[in-house]
Amino acid sequence: MTYREMKAALDAGRIGAPLLIHCLHRNREAPRWFDGSMIVTNAMVHEIDICRWLLDTEYTSASLTQVGDAGDMLLAELHTDRGAVVSVEMFMNAAYGYHVHAEIVGREGTVAMAEPAQVRLRRGGAMQAGYSPDWIGRFADSYRLQDQAWVRACRSGRPCKDMATARDGLLATGYCQQLVEHLPAGGGPLAPRM
Image (cartoon, rainbow, N blue to C red; front, side, top):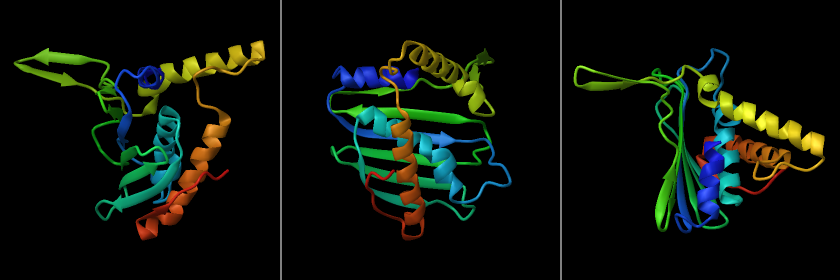
């Protein structure tokens, strides 16, 4: 739901022309079976998909920086055919919890997700906020609303408005395949691939 609100603000021109999207995607802990390419195909795929949809754009190139020697952190900078830049920080073992955030920087302002903490404790001159241990706490309502919209669309025979499509998912998968191919070189050109 938050992404739809961000897109509505962007499409209404409330922040001007989009220049940059900053994304971060941090998991508390990656499963043991998680391998290096899965940081792109299992996690970053969501940012690749949502930013393409938010900006209504295609990617043209990427630079990739693996941070540290554990293989669990990756920085990506993707350039689009409309001149915007998408920066994505992936950290698979952030320890403190599950944390996804996005901010769009426009020529006339910004629009960003609120912090994901559900509860804030204020005590002794300090405030504490908690993060969900996984994606369920952060996105359960979004998945429920998305599923309800899909059922309504199936019943009515009309496509869902203002939502990503299966084609969007296929294109995101194609970009992620290219990013995995570019990991050893640290980046390269991108093109729509299905």
